[in-house]
Length: 334
Ligand SMILES: [Zn+2]
Image (cartoon, rainbow, N blue to C red; front, side, top):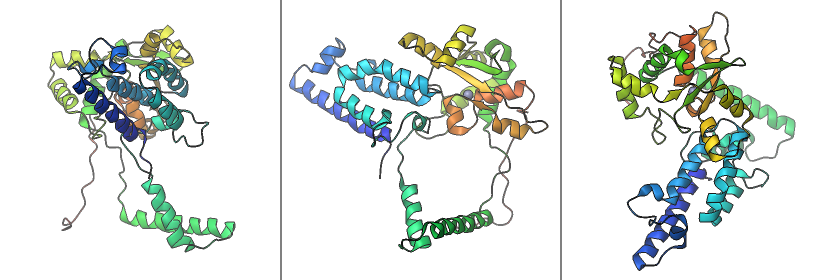
């Protein structure tokens, strides 16, 4: 079983916390704390904690929208990591960044996945089924093997089709709809069209309406949305403060993504690129085939930016409420 990098990160950083606390108690000055800041790293000033910087760097790596930016940010964070946690840097680099190493189980694409520890249990279970059900632990000729995999897939597909109820329309939360509608109302002040794509800028690189631990919409975002719905002007303004219209120059930098200066990187990495793919007379397909480069889109396949763009262009009606179909009959006792 392999836990993903976040689980490992936590383990490593916890270790560091413990060791620094230990040295503080004994009255020694740690090498790390003297190098990093004049304040002790376990003081109440949490902003000076190395752990926090590492966590933030990892969150940025997970949020950037292309591989070039990912590798650029690795170069930017490298000096800090190498100075303050050299061993951990080597470990992290070999296991999660350097794809040329055989035991590296990630790289840029895996950073785009949802946060939180994951296991490879599903793969193990799949292998077990292949061995137990399909081949009965026998070595089969390749043709027979592929045929048995095909048969099994067919059987499972029919089985699931009979059991599962597939949703017929996307489920989009009311919070998301309200906020998107609000952004769409001021579309021209925040979005810009450039070479066939649309661009908008978030206030932060790591910007999400979802709680990374639970995967649900953050409580404070929900509250903000309900205030906006009740036409609270203050709430509307504070929501729109999160967005900015990017300049053409910064969009060009974003597309090239070859800037290695930290400050400049931070400005261009918060730009979101939207692709509108209009399917004639089919707004559902337009929604499904259009995309955004933000973290929320990668994790949930919808985001505020994309819905706002679709509303503005007339391919989405925020007044429609998608609801789950209710099952007929009595509820099961289970
Ligand atoms: Zn987006």
